[in-house]
Image 1 (cartoon, rainbow, N blue to C red):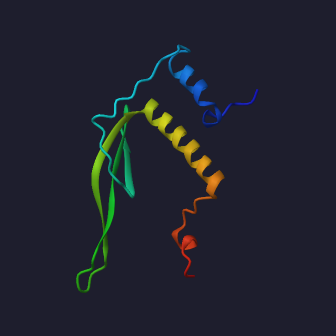
Image 2 (image 1 turned 90 degrees about the vertical axis):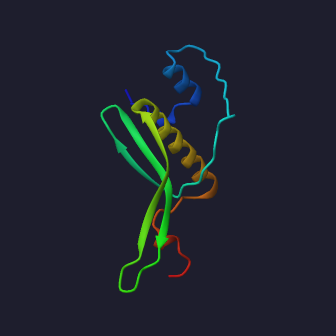
Image 3 (image 1 turned 45 degrees about the horizontal axis):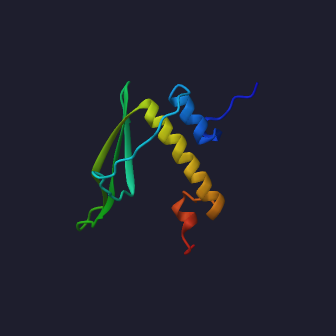
Length: 117
C-alpha cells in the first residue's frame, strides 16, 4: 500500500482530517492584521512549540580594517504548536510548487542567479 504524501492531498481532504471529518465554516477577521516584510528568518523549537523569528538582513558597513557584517534585525516572532507548523510547512510547499510550475524553478544559489559570471 503506497503511503500518501501529505502535501499531495487536496486541501478539502486535509481540512476534513484536521477537524475529525466535520464540516466547519471558517470566518476570517483581518481587522487587527498588520503587514511586515522579511528577507530572513530564524527557527527554534522546544518539545511543544516552534518559534519563527522574521526580520531583515542588513549589511553593516565595515569599519576600517574590519570585515563587513550582516545584522539580522528581528521584527516579528511567531510561535506555533507542531501541528500548525506542519500544516504551514505543507501549505508553503504546495504554494512554492505551484509558483515553480508557473514561473520556473527558484534557484537558491545566489551565484547561479547572478547574471554577471
